[in-house]
Length: 180
Image (cartoon, rainbow, N blue to C red; front, side, top):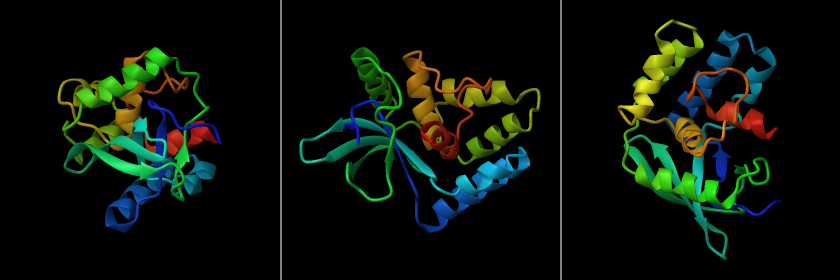
């Protein structure tokens, strides 16, 4: 495994009712878009987080969007079930510093369940959807976990997706597809 570095991200399954709800939403989203083969993969991960720093003992300091807002959390490099983005993106040192600085500046930003509705509107191709989703992120500072990752990368001009999607239109399953 490539070393986990600041600016990387991790994906993990989430237990409990929240994880089950996110898994179900991602599954239905994939089915609604006609992505039958991806629908089963949507259930693999329902949470994403950015790596702020990594200690020599393998402790990962992360920044993540969570109900209640963007916060810091600790993980382990060797924690079972986590998949790391390490080695998948050719980030410069400056880009890594920029991603982390952007995430730190957004600590305590809001998390909104309405963000799921905004993302669904985009994926249904309603005319106002892209602007409404961008407003959620850029003006209201409301993030889902995967949107936090996308916004941090976009801040340093790294466009992870080349499929024409709206900025911030990303779910954990989409990030998983990038790493597959």
